[in-house]
Length: 126
Image (cartoon, rainbow, N blue to C red; front, side, top):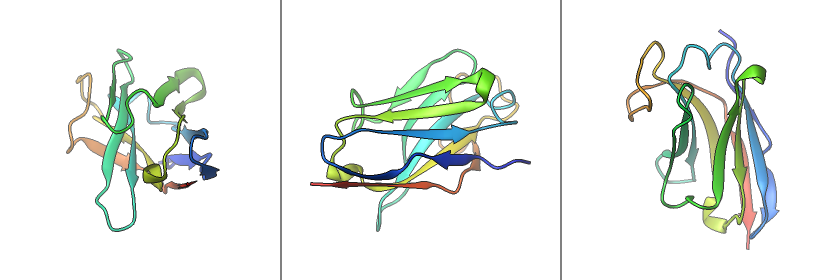
């Protein structure tokens, strides 16, 4: 199984933007949803967004709603995460995830995430 591979992280100043990419070959056709999670030092991993691979439904955590956008290009097996108006509190390791493998669900619950990438670091300075 080819792993999920994230890219696009980096260091930006507050108010800046970044685009994260996730190469998801072999996952998007078999998974009900793709998502982005993040984990800051000393904190638990949290879901920040997900997108249905079939119905294009999306979910965003309140902390990123209106600033971040998840999208997908199924022809390229890519999932993107556009992050605008970045804040220092967005600093974290960001992970791409695939969930609901074999499921007909539109969205994925907390225990349905099957596969994870290695993560890409995002650092926002004030």
